[in-house]
Image (tube, rainbow, N blue to C red; front, top):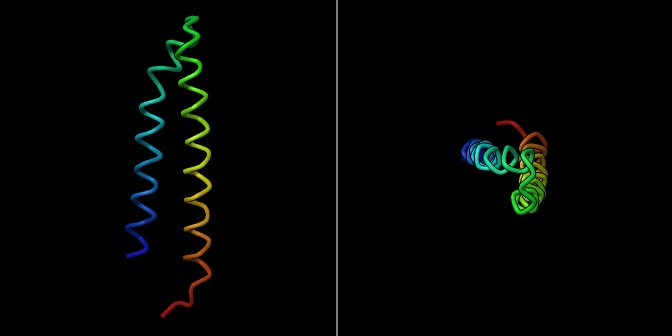
Length: 65
């Protein structure tokens, strides 16, 4: 059950990175609005990565059966 939570979180992170790619490219070409979206997405990515770390730490701390 917990493995699914880890994998679900990981898949969310991968999807977010893929979604950000378009805006990163646009921002590198000078599109300021894409830069705003990129930074917002990166903050969300940071949050989701932190959540994944918390889940994996909790999993590691659980006693093994």
